[in-house]
Length: 243
Image 1 (cartoon, helix red, strand yellow):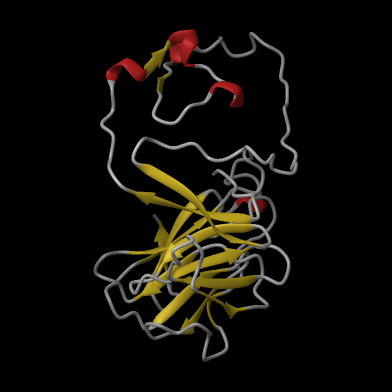
Image 2 (cartoon, helix red, strand yellow):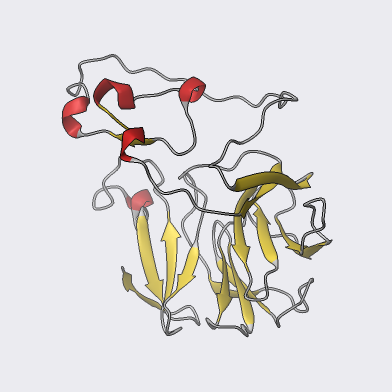
């Protein structure tokens, strides 16, 4: 899962869509790239035969580090699209979800564990309104609106160790109730993100729980039980099965 580590959100405004051009599909050695030659709209087709055999090369790492954005650095996109800075000052925003009314909900996973809301867009590309919907959550990530449709009654949030929900009506900028715990005791450690989705008929809730180790066997390592799984529950939090 790609981690959103910037402290800014960008809004991509679609004007027209460019069709994929077969000439932009790179194959073989030409398909491999670094950040220096990545370009929007270029497709890369990499097959198993293009990769070295297992163990053919030594293990290596190239960890990322955060640096100040140069003045001339900006996300590149396809012709017909425009990228503008929508909001700044966020603390590790990890996920955005759009409510049925168009409000943008953002989970700030670290710090005070907040869910922020951004509403509308000005002529300059900024949010018209900003509000903190909820705070004091534990590494929140997943956000889902229930029941599915134009008038949800709850906002569900995936903490790293639980799933909670807030009473909600369309247009609320702040939670009107304390969080209600729907699922408790989700195993923690390792990958912390817990995403949430509902089936279209609203009868099933799916919760993703990442691995603790990436490699351990859940049948022999207790800490990996119910990890690296999508778990199915009822909307009220009753466990059904490993999906």
